[in-house]
Image (cartoon, rainbow, N blue to C red; front, side, top):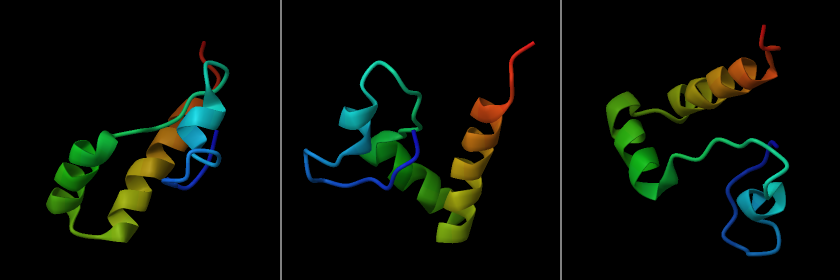
Length: 60
């Protein structure tokens, strides 16, 4: 499931994904740690994109 992190309970993609969908979540501490390493929203998007591409590739 794709979605932007949203603090509102009804729209939080993690809640909407439930057990039926895969999502990428570093948690707040993990996000901060990764951002401190890459220092760029563009680089953070590359991390997200890599996850999306990996999860959309059929497993053999």
